Length: 553
Image (cartoon, rainbow, N blue to C red; front, side, top):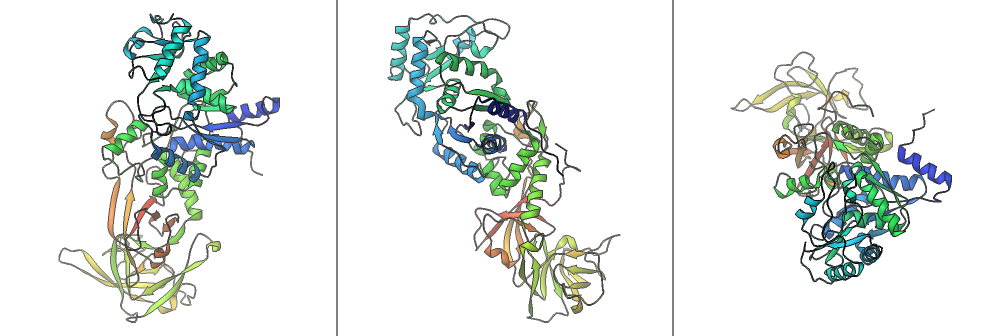
């Protein structure tokens, strides 16, 4: 009997809240800012928020935190929705912080009326100077004691567009000596004369994250607002605003974000990789973006399984990239179709096979009988991997070499009789004879061999471009502050093979299909692939070449 998985700390909180009757049902939210593409770190948050809703019979909202019109775009909105759905989740409501601009404005007015907010004329630099340090109290702004009437008029004038960007801000009036720097009269609104992707030019003042976030949670009646650890200092302000505004008491909880070896998670750094041409876009298969991973051939199930394995913790830790690859291989091993593709081809000619003859051989489609079989054409001339041949067999070499025998997958045993080389000493053709009585599935010879190699019929093979991807960075922690992270980029992270050959069954393949090229790795079609030019991405190798064993989590 399998041991039941223990609850994480957020599940414990939710179960206690439901048991006590504090909530009859839970409502969570995933609140991305539409200023970039989602990455694997966001996948952890998506799986957590939507997973909790599913587990406890609740719901999850998808809410776009679109309060900064300068950086946001509908392109990012669309990509985020596609990523969430691809991961297997559906939201209860599609919402936007901009839906609440009018309500948030009125809440800000309410704070002013209560004497808890004021309009400040100081510049960002002056505000920062007066804020003090963690050990030195801040100093009051000279505008802190403006009258309620004056603040209301100034805030209305800000909304009406009478001031330029940065000329005035709205600040909460809390405590300039508070130990928590976030409580030292934080900014609530700033002026930005910029076109918004949804509201157009209707607004020129926009709420700051700390004001929009908690109040949006409250408006939606979010029961458990789950953030990453860097928002712990913000929680006090989150609670203060809800208390002073006397609105629905949403509660914030924090968990450790995902940190992973050999990658970067910062949107700013990912944007640099794209804009400076180090990668070929947000969905480059080397990127940790969900769209990039999808293009590379990752499955949604493997990412969900990875997020489940790493769990939910209160402390930051570094997750080995090998664990993500382990989860991917585990899923692909069960689900990928088996096919044959030769990446570094050399001709193998079966000298005693009849010219012009073609056989249709039966080969397995997958790891078990449930996947059925497919027909693979076999002929006199085949493509095989150059690495499967040695001019002089080494000790324990069980593949092709003069005088050696090997089985061709799903076909016959062949014996290598010779080879030819060009003027540069490169092997161009391998000559073999086949044993007719050794046909797979009907072998009556009693002959056994230790090696089996894959192949494709040269007459029927399809030409293909194959892209082999490695990790984008050469070091475990490219984000360390000692050097520019771009100095750690792996210049060999992409190798393009233009002369590969694959079996003809792949002409009927789809972009969503996943394949195991026997003995070579897991592959998928790239989005640019066409029937006229097949293009494949290597998703992951068959074995982990980076570490000897997967860490236990």
